[in-house]
Length: 345
View 1: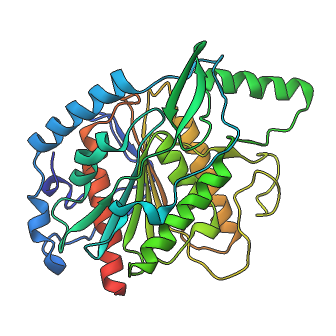
View 2: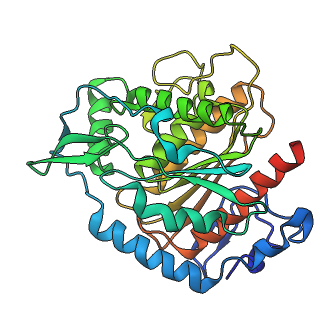
C-alpha cells in the first residue's frame, strides 16, 4: 500500500478490513484528486520502502528507548517550566506550511526528525518541520531516580487507572483527574502557535502532531479553545490520550473542573483531529483514544458544531509501535488539512 493506493479510498463509519487489521470511525478521504493544486508529485514522493525503513528505526527506538512507567513510579517535579518559544531558533519559518511534532515521554526530539519529514514529504512548496524538545525533569521510575524529557506528568498504565476507577466506584470518589503539569504545557503550546502566527503563518497552515505523551499534549490543545488559534489546521495523534478526564456522569459544560474547556469568549473554530491508535497497545490502550474522541465530540456538539471533525483509526494488530497504515492514513489526512488551508489562503 502507498499514497496512490489510498487515493480513492472512501472511509466509512466503522469500516473494518480484517486483512489489514485496520479500523476507522469517520469518513473524509473520498473525492480527493491527486492531481489538483500541484499535489500530483506528492503521490510518488514516499514509497513503501521509505516507510518500511523509517518505521524500523522508529519502532526500534520505541521498543528500546522509551521508558515504561511502573505503578510505583512518581514525578518529583514541582515547577513545570517550559523553555521560551522565542529562544528556539529551529522555530523560524521558511515555508507557508508547518508541522510541529512532539516526542513522547523520556525521548528526544531528534529521534523523530525522519518520521516527521516523511509525513509531509512532497507537500507543494515544502513544509517546515518543528521538533521541540521537552524539558528534562526528575522522576522515580521503578525505584530508580532518573532525569528524562517530559512535557507533563505521564498517565500511568491502564491497569493502575482501572484500579483507580474501581476504587472510585466503591468510595464514591470523583472521577475527575488530570495529569500534573498539563496546564503549563498547554500554555506553552499556545505560545508556540502564537509565535508561528507572528512569523506570518497563514490560517490552517500549522499541523501539530505527536507520539504518545507528545500526542497527549496535542490532544489537550485540541480540547482547549484558548489554543484554537486560526493558524492551527489540525491535530494528529499517534498512540495518544487525553491527559485529563471529566466526570463522565455529567454533561460537558466547558466550565466544570476537568471538563473540555470552551470559554465562550470568542467565536473560534476547533481544529480537525485524527487519532491513530494500536488495538493491542499496553501503554496507551485504544479505549483511552475512544474516550478522548467521545469527549472531543461532545464538547464540540455543545458548542453547536455540526461536524466534530474528530476521527479515530485503530490498527487492531499493533501495540505502541507504529505501522505502515498509520503513515499512509496520516499523510492523506495532513494533505487534506493543508489543501483546505491553501484554499482559504
